[in-house]
Length: 75
Image (cartoon, rainbow, N blue to C red; front, side):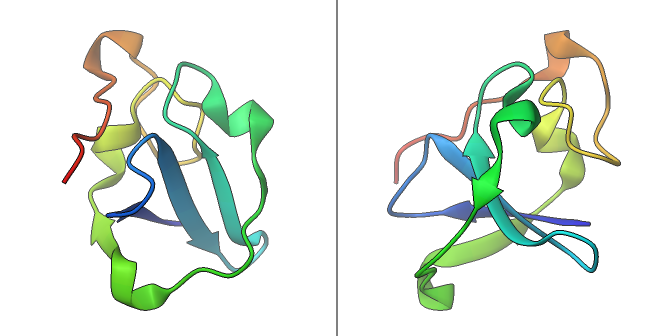
């Protein structure tokens, strides 16, 4: 699983995995539970970031600790 951040939508995370394809989910606690297919992603506007930034969201591979949750900053 790889985690991405969009410069256009800083309150969402984007992820890509072989099993899931491209998905998006809110950058909130347990946001992964509200994931949905991501459509129309412009790869020019997304950058890969460490999985640890999505701690507490439930993203597979990210730390479970909610205290580490970091909302992305607006660009």
